[in-house]
Amino acid sequence: MRSIRARVLAAVLGLLGAAALLIGALTYRGVHAEVEALFDYQLRQMALSLRDQGEVAPAQAAALADGQLDFVVQIWTADGRAIYAPRPHAQLPLRAQLGLADVSVGGATWRSYTVATPSRVIQVAQPLAVRRRLAAEAAWRSVWPLLLVAPLLGAAAWWGTMHALAPLERLAGALRRRDAASLAPLPESGLPDELAPLVAALNTLLQRLAAALDAQRSFVADAAHELRSPLTALKLQLQQLKRAPDDARRAAAVEALAGGIERAARLVEQLLALARSEPGAAAAPLLALDLGETARAALAEVAPLAAARGAQIELLADEPVWIDGDRAGLQALVRNLADNAVRHGGAAARVAVRVRRDGAQAELCVDDNGPGIAPAQRAQAFGRFVRGVGGGQPGEGAEGSGLGLAIVRSIAERHGGHAALEESPLGGLRVRVRLPGGAAAATTPGDNP
Image (cartoon, rainbow, N blue to C red; front, side, top):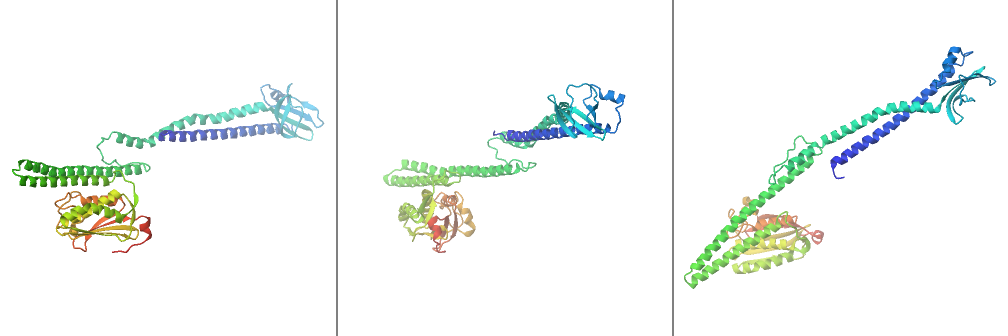
């Protein structure tokens, strides 16, 4: 049974049915016992009313002998001689027991009350079957109104349950009628206390979903805009190659075209890296790895660019720093930071990459001697496609796509860490990334900067 309505109705109707049966049974037994007690009282009163009479008057004897009377009166003398019996009866009790007693005569049971005086013994008896029939009829008359009310109570319970669940039905109907593109919040006023948290959670989810879709639409629009420029440049460079009048200009056009292709390929690669690091993307399994070795492998990929630009890259990783992370993602993080530092350092750029433990965390610092970023502009430097902020070059500068720091922040947050921009001892920019350490990183505290 999956329906809440069916379960609530079954529970309520079951409880009502059980309560009706219990109350009916208790009422039946109580009324039955009270009627039996009343009959016993009548027996006693009849016997006591005849106790002090000398003789039974003819009129009274005629009334007691009425065949429609359920009571039978017998009177004996002190020595046991019967002095009164109202009418011939096949099953009259022939012996007396003082007080109330059940007497069996000829297969029938009689309820009797006997009282004794110095001169006589008076017994009043009534068939037990008659008493029980009358008591049962009185008990049923007290129970049947409850049986009539029970269905009405069931109908009222059904109506009350439907009325109580009506807000849930209205909420479901409002959601069914919504357009697939509608992410407006649901109304929260006038809701029951039990339903309000659900609607609040749905509104929070819709808000997050709207923000995610807005970010996705913005990302797609920005990506399309960013791709348009290098593709346009490639078309122009290709036209220049076709129009080159001599080998020298043709070689220059080929070199420019190769550079454009490289930049376009790098932009596409960074777009894919950013998409893989976004929240909601399929998460790669986290493995125990040494952050220093991961940084060394990433720097090896940047080494050709550094050599071509005359830049120096130094890695400081004196001891293993173990973390639980995605190797490909962390390599992309280090590669983007080192690539940015090399590109922004200009001629004779110096880049220092340091990996160490800092308490229970792992820390990665990348310093360069480039122009840096003004403190007031560092917050926006982690945005997508941000280039040329202030005196420095956030992201990847004018020659890049502006995605480098966005990728770094996304990967760091996906690992439960964060990235920050600071002044570098080398005179340029320092990017400090803190990540949760693994078991080895948490056991040995490192030195603080």
